[in-house]
Image (cartoon, rainbow, N blue to C red; front, side, top):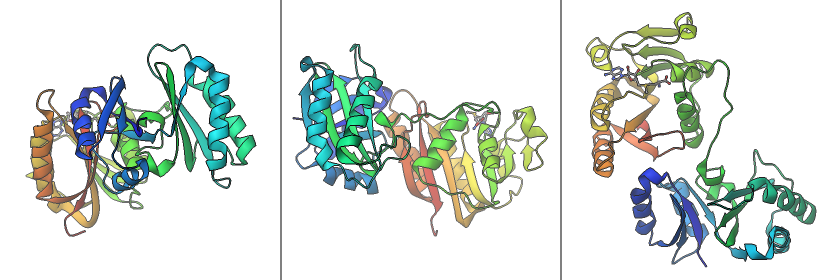
Length: 337
Ligand SMILES: C[S@@+](CC[C@H](N)C(=O)[O-])C[C@H]1O[C@@H](n2cnc3c(N)ncnc32)[C@H](O)[C@@H]1O
């Protein structure tokens, strides 16, 4: 039986597999592109604890496999067996949720499992069902002929969301899809922005990140030769400098509490420029950068860019997020901070 199911963006599958092999994990099967059943020499929870402190960059989500149930017996049987097995293991005082993923061609909806299993587990264990803020998660992955089922704490899984798929509600005022990228980064790195901080947004146009920063009470200097969305042009909390980041750097920048950089630049060039901006970050400050990776040899480009950043900052986190395309988001702190 595999120990866990690991998930990553299929575009970065080789890098994710390398991360799994680095912890002596063996791929048992690729259940779907970017989703693997994995055998570990040790147990799931030891790895979960290790990765909670030092998360991998490309593996987005893990969940344990404690039992494998044949789908041929029917969904009702899978649900009944899972209730018998897992209800006694649930902590009755903690909210739980059931997260089901259906892989491949199976004609089953996640709801077909989530609903009966959630209801029956709640009744049998007394634990409250809370899909928004669960402390414990029963993960169910249906693939081929089997249901892989395992119980863990939410903090064990690298992401609170099934397979690391973090969706945000769209908002009418949204300026760009890039907003989700910043929201996801703030959530995954557990970043609280300083109250009424001064933020610098490099490569800001059309202004999605600037809008998110404004919603979080930051005063934003937005640097981009391109125009910002009209709604931001009239916002008094936004100063738009129609300059490149290179030009602003040559123009005696201010010092900031927060610097974010989503510039469409080669990862290494962007990292070099970000390094230069390091001296304009207060010692208590924080920074975020998206490193745009090339299709080929992205691993060496990423290593190189991270090494450049390391010369100027402490790397507090680096993850390939659900809302990242061909990029990795890096969370930086000043070296002395
Ligand atoms: C992906 S978009 C940023 C999207 C933005 N974060 C948002 O939420 O709307 C990349 C931006 O980087 C800008 N850019 C590229 N090179 C730049 C440079 N050297 N200096 C400043 N901006 C740059 C482009 O003009 C473009 O608007």
